[in-house]
Length: 328
Image 1: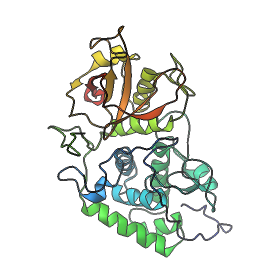
Image 2: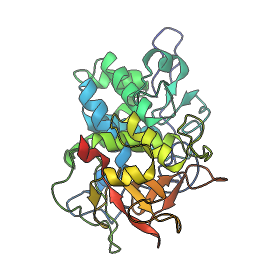
Image 3: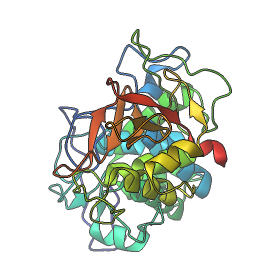
Image 4: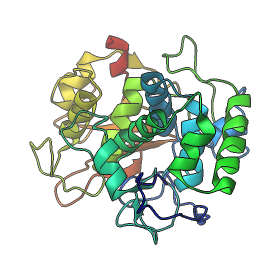
């Protein structure tokens, strides 16, 4: 966790070990993960990479490119601080921990005030939103000498020699697993498990859209709404991709026509998933849409009386998928 530089800054101990992994939900409720579980990673994808939720991986890589710091360093900090947002310790999705740190990258209030970033361009610097917290961590590390003086930068992030050693060890493990690509695939995505649920590293824009959608979890469904306090289904997907810098139509039927269509079984995190919601809809004009996050799960605003939530999309009324990032 980063410290405010100054004589009044206290020396903090090594970050607490987080247990009881809950799934990458930020912020909000509902279990779910958007990477292969241990032991079921896609062919060619090693465990140290499969350990990172795809939305986080995309954000680490974007921040690394922007601030000139290795993605593996940022990923290692995220792993140690909060298990990429999945830790059960206090302060990760709300409030603060015993040291006053908050969010997935565990910032103190003073440091956040100085180095916080509006990473998803939504007009807010949200310490609990990984789309903001991850580039802020990169910005803070760069300010403190990274990448040339990475040990010094990490020691200022958390004044513990054990912390620095642990982060560097984890970063080395991630780096040895290979550098993933944020580009769209040129071939079929390898299945994650025998059921054929597809996985893969999302494009940078898709990762931003997923991160934005995650930050809206538990906000109520309101027909015709597209934030910031409520959403309908297509309002959520439209606003998520607008935050990612990708323009798509506003309503689900037009989003479906916008395409391109992706075959069932070849979907990736960040794709849109469409459903026949009753007699008034069809394959030409589907009535419901969600945002794929991986392993058969989506983020969606279902209907009146519900909230934005994580749900399975493998159900009888599934129509198909589109890939908004193909238009970039």
